[in-house]
Length: 72
Image 1 (cartoon, rainbow, N blue to C red):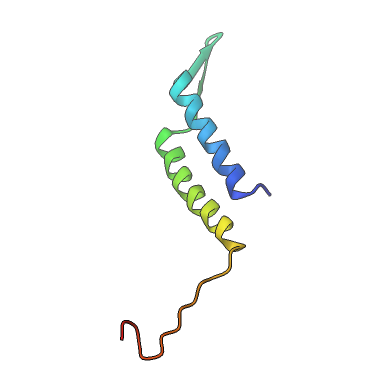
Image 2 (cartoon, rainbow, N blue to C red):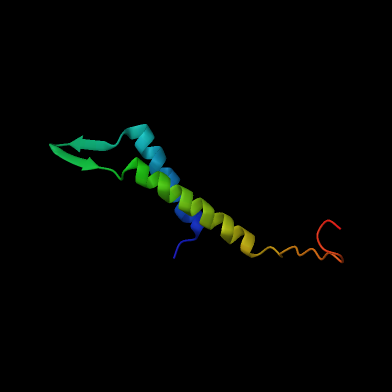
């Protein structure tokens, strides 16, 4: 399975293609419609969050201990 970063890169490439080449292609009387731009934008948001979560997974968590409660 591809990593979240790879999936994010693929979705961004698809968005770039739509913006550059258009939503549909017609050749020899046949028409090909690409994925909906709105759907790709939603996937981009989801995969960006997944990629951020994956990159944080290897980092240690910071835990702060307060002797008399927070701010005391």
